[in-house]
Length: 120
Image 1: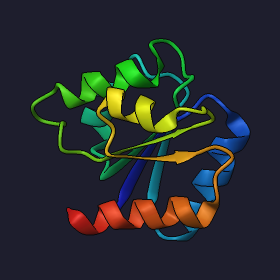
Image 2: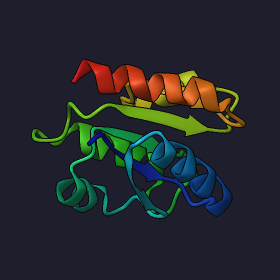
Image 3: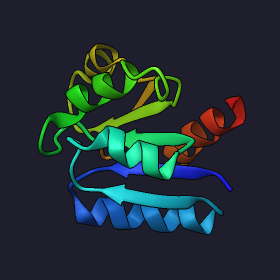
């Protein structure tokens, strides 16, 4: 089963994304903090990660960098999901694999996730 780990501190967004992906047969895990990203990833072993930028305690950029600097987990695709005018630059500096701007189109998000699931 495909597994997706979502880091976001907005409960309404977590709820919507979780429902959509669970209905599509994904196993979904959510986290409202990012400082423990390595522990969460080690435990859940996601195929794809969705990362919000404005998330406690260390923020999306630092959390993604932490993951990408970790030998075992650096190849897990991270899709940056945030409301920011300069999301492309942010995603690049975080070493994220892709990005979707908030407010996002759910179909775009589903397509990007499916794309990275198919690469593994």
